[in-house]
Image 1 (cartoon, rainbow, N blue to C red):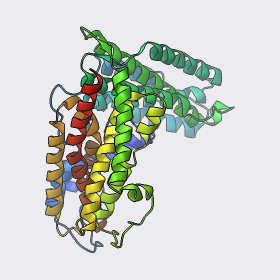
Image 2 (image 1 turned 30 degrees about the vertical axis):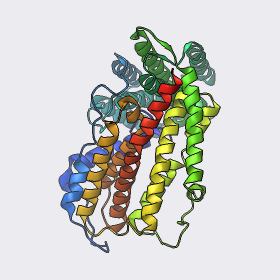
Image 3 (image 1 turned 90 degrees about the horizontal axis):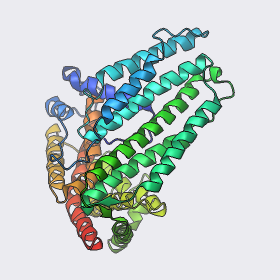
Image 4 (image 1 turned 60 degrees about the vertical axis):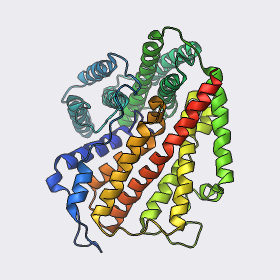
Length: 446
């Protein structure tokens, strides 16, 4: 969920979302069950889960989307696409057909916008429009390469302009606010946008010597540069909207720095005191470090999901780079996952989370996960709990999509049950961590 598309190409993400929605919309055609399954499951409860909406956060606690931001991305995306003819006149017929098809796909995506996407949070919708803007730029970039209307020098010049604007922004930006919890949430989101800008500027392939011979690569580069610009625009707008609405802003840098250091120590101490190091060191290994065989059980997915969250490393990198709002929030996510991992390990060692006997068991787990997330979101301060609880949102969205897209046999139903259980364990660990962060922030802000 989220405004980010880290680790996914634009087209792969859009394909996943579109396929999910098509499946959800046409529930009567959902491919549940298979004659080849070793065990069949009742389809009704699984259809219900594939159709359900995710919990919505309490009103007024989300980070506000800057006014006009969605329209800005929408306008820019359409301008970019309008520069590409519906039937591109390029010498290579195959490239012309591919350009026309890609243009039509993006035009359809822009027409549909974010109304058909299962995004619950305003920032997710904003991120989706950044994504669509990058898609439009990718099509235009490929078209310009095919018509010999682009050069490496032009791209480098644009990247240099964005870098200059980014450095100007960073030189002026401070952790300013009136309330430490809300300031943390807003500046965390700003840092995520800055990270996205940097990533799209840095992680791009080498510009080809002959652009017309590799129009797709040129398109990807153009899309990345446009997305970097869009992310920076959103960061600036979010900062300005927040700070300009403050009556008496002051800096929280000292407080965020202190809490970042404390969360780091607390997480490491908890891992050591609870004897969890062996489970974190085992990341990526297929085996559970005890006698029980987890293959084909709910516990297999549950263990891997929570283990991966507990192995969260982004907060450590952020601390090294002095991105302290990110260090605090992502450190809170890691700490919550460590707390959840302790409970998961205990449950699995007690023999829990084995085989799924019926679809109703998955429905029960889903309900427990939803209630746990609702409880996490009502924990004060809600601006912080929403940020820390995001992995539970992501898990629920993932399993909803997966149920809508796959035939549900034994493997799929155990995967779904394990994912719901992961969301439940993680969400239940959020409230104490949020209260700890709030107390730490309050004390450090005095």
